[in-house]
Image (cartoon, rainbow, N blue to C red; front, side):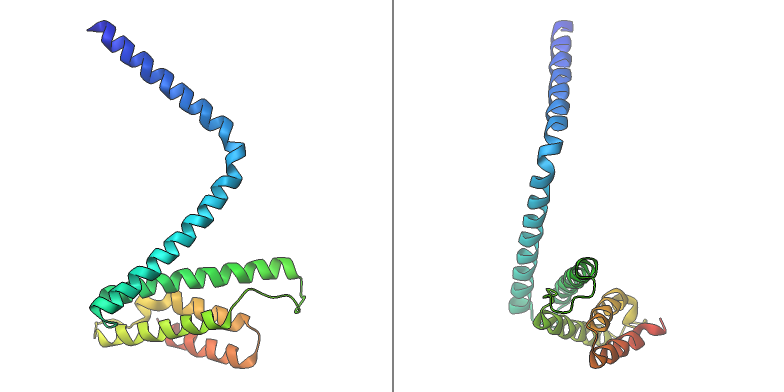
Length: 168
């Protein structure tokens, strides 16, 4: 029985050492591969989330809480994407307006539409708190995106969204 314990311990120790050695040798070569896998996973997650949201709307209806939670999650992802593109644009363009900034006005319009639907949904819940307690982050995110577009009309519209959450 002592031989079996020693044999198992030795096997586990060797397995641990070889795993650590393999991990340390692969870290430098796998950084790019990990970045690519992360981007691919993010794309797959976004597609899955979109499919789930479409299925929830078709089965449960657009006023169901599940469909709206998925909509909120997708809106958070969109706002994060907008901010990433804006940060990359500001760090790389250095004031060159001729470059394509990567922001699609259709995506921004969809985000605004989603935000309006979420505000309507949370208002209709008749909770004892203001909808901005639930939607403050995404509302501010959409407003930032609108203000960053630079035209006066978008900036005013972004300010209107900020006014909704300003008191809270």
